[in-house]
Image (cartoon, rainbow, N blue to C red; front, side, top):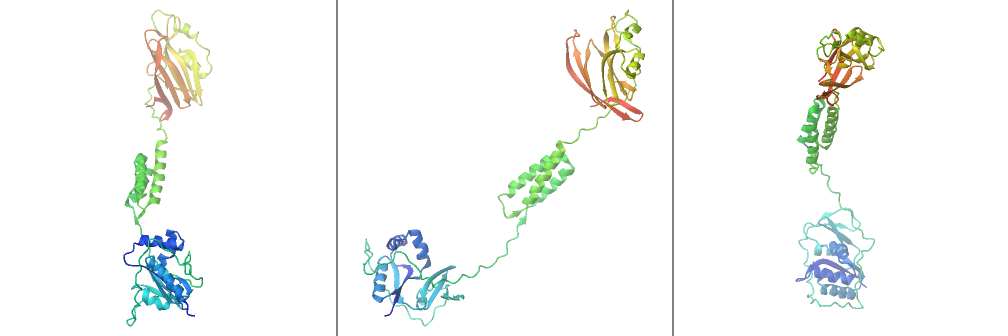
Length: 396
């Protein structure tokens, strides 16, 4: 007995709505709409049933036409073919049905073969038999118990489509290099040698990164990141630059003068000197030979020694004017203040020998009452080597 196969062409009958037809067919096959379109209609034309007798094949073809689609019955032969349309494999189909379903531009391949052939219509090909009369689409579609469609369309396992040819390898386009990244790198290099330009270089590098982020067709992100690192390094170097070396003012020699009195008619200077603090070293003894009245305040750091002494006293031998004397390696190098601090107007509040070359002096301005003084001025002095020896000067 001759066997037949049922082929679904994928074409709709005239006047049918695609969505409505797909919905009816998916319900008839017991499939979801998305799965039906992917597994059935996307592969049409294809064989949906094999090994049917002629009566059953005709009955199921009539049912499919009633649903609104084109279906044909073909002899069930051993020679099958595959179609490739729009770069998608369709089928399988009986080889005899190739002329019926192939379209210009399609390619075909024997089942089990590896070579695709361009399809061209045969000039002498006979026209296909006319389609049976179109059946009216009922509102409901009863399925005959003797010839029912299977709920799921399957393709026999031995029939596998041949592989599609490999896509041609295209040479990737060469990306253009960003001119902004080049300028950013040059500015960052400049900032390494001239640190004040580092804030502008860092801002420019960050703006370049923002500019390149939404533009994948431009190269230069690595260069912009390197510019950010260089600019940040230059900025750190600029912010932590070493403090300038203090510049000592020209040294003006100030020789020691005899102890003076704040008012006429006071006691002799020699009597006040005898009431001074005990000298602790050779520097203090040098001040006593110049008739200075030691207050007892002094500091030493390394080879530098600073002592406070009175250059004027009142009639009770109390200091009225104070001065600071600086020694280096035991040699007197000068006084700190150009004019001794008078307790009536300026008080020598404090002094601090920071190290052997830097001295900080705090002065307070006083009102009519000597006790009413407020610290208002801090002055910096430096002990530095000069052309003729060590010198003392105020730093700016």
